[in-house]
Image 1 (cartoon, one colour):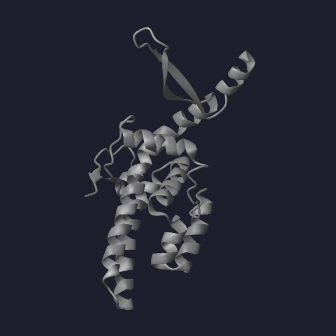
Image 2 (image 1 turned 90 degrees about the vertical axis):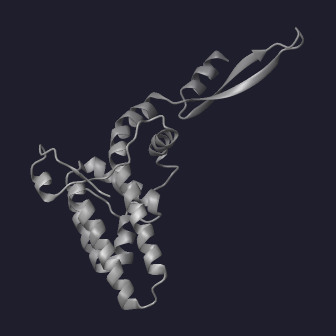
Image 3 (image 1 turned 180 degrees about the horizontal axis):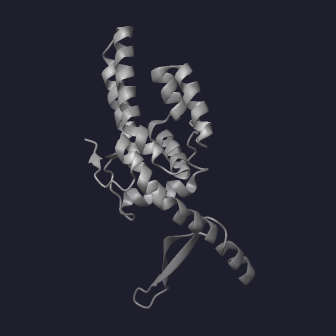
Length: 203
C-alpha cells in the first residue's frame, strides 16, 4: 500500500485529497476534503522554463486578438468587396508594423510560444490569419520565411497538449503570477541597438 501511494504521488499531474477532521460535540467525526494539485519534477521544470516566455509574449497575443476583433467588426458592416479588401490590407499592415521588430527582437523559443498563443487567443493559426486577410500567396511566403527562422506559422494551439502553458495562463488570470499586459513597440533603431532603452507603448 505504501509503494502504491508513492507511485501515485509522482504521476503528472495528479490530484491528492487532503482531509480535515471536524468534531461535533464528540460525536462521530466528519471529514471535509480539500483538493490540492501536485505536479512532478518535469512539470515544474517546464513551468519554470516557459513562465518568463509566456509573461513576455502573452500581451502581444492578446493585442493581436483585439486588433483582429476590431477589424472583423469594421468589416461586418461593409458589403463592397473593394472596400473590405482595402480595410483588410490597412489592418494587416498595422498588425505587421506593430509586430515586425518585436518578433525580430525575440529569441526563437519566444517566437514559437507567441505563435501558439496567437492561435489560442484568435482561434486561428498565424498562417490562417495571413491567408484570410492577405491571401494564400503571402501566407506561403511567410510560411517559408518562418521555417528559415525555426518558426511554424501553421502551429495550432492544443489546450490538452499545452497543459504547461495553460497552467501558466491560469496563474496569470488568477493573479498568482505578476503580469503587465502593456504592449511595447520596438522600432527599427531599437532593434538594431538592443541597449537603447526608450520604448514607446502601443495605445
